[in-house]
Image (cartoon, rainbow, N blue to C red; front, side, top):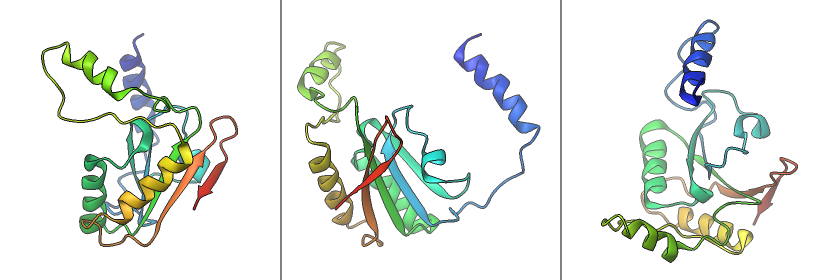
Length: 161
């Protein structure tokens, strides 16, 4: 069975106990930005339920222009007020070589219009991420932005101030 076939089968089982639709606006008025890493169980680690928060994920959990666009929609159209940023230990973006990756992609004949920034200091990157979100003029609610490092070995989160 392929991974996609597994998803289809799991969905058939899920729909049998599906409690029905939930409200469009997140109950906690919260948006969480994190890495796409499959080891991060945000629902379990943060005590979230379906419908509690917007979850926005990308490589590294970095506040890229696309993430800022999603946060602007989340706040301006769907009522969120607080933002949590989550980076994590053992991230694949730690030490990532953007120029080499871009050169690899350019071999296709098409150069991407985006960067894939890596980092070397997780805490400095989080502080920079917090600053980027707090300085984004598209977001009306920038005072409640907090950042955390998720330890993939223990699932503990450490706040970065």
